[in-house]
Length: 135
Image (cartoon, rainbow, N blue to C red):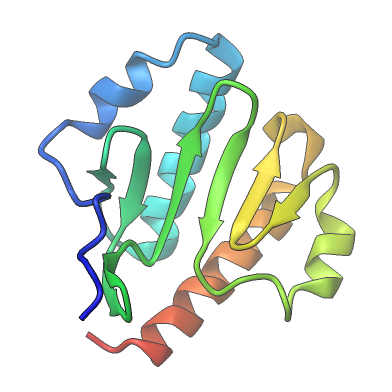
C-alpha cells in the first residue's frame, strides 16, 4: 500500500495565507483565482499543506488530493489542473503567456492570460475530475 501524501488539508485560513503573500501583484492575482475557483467549484477553498489552496477532494491511487488548486509561488502563480493538459490544445493556444509541466499551469501574471479561457479550462477540469472520481 502506498504511503499517504504529506500534503493534507490544514486548518490555516486561506485568507491569512493569501494576505501573507509578499508580492502585491501575486497576492492580487491569488485573490482573483481564489474567487474564480470558488465560483467554478461551488466550494470554499482549503489550505493543503503550507502553500496550496485546494478545492474539493478526490481519492486517487496515492491518497486524497484537491480536485483543483493553486499556489501563489514567489516566481509564478501555479494552477494545479489534476486532469492534465492532453485535451486542452485549443484552450492553451488561446490562453496567452504560460508554461505547463505535468499537471501544473505556470503563469507569471494574470494580465498575461485570458481569464475567460482560464475559467473555461478550470470548469472543464473540475467537471472531468468529478465525473471520474464521483464522491
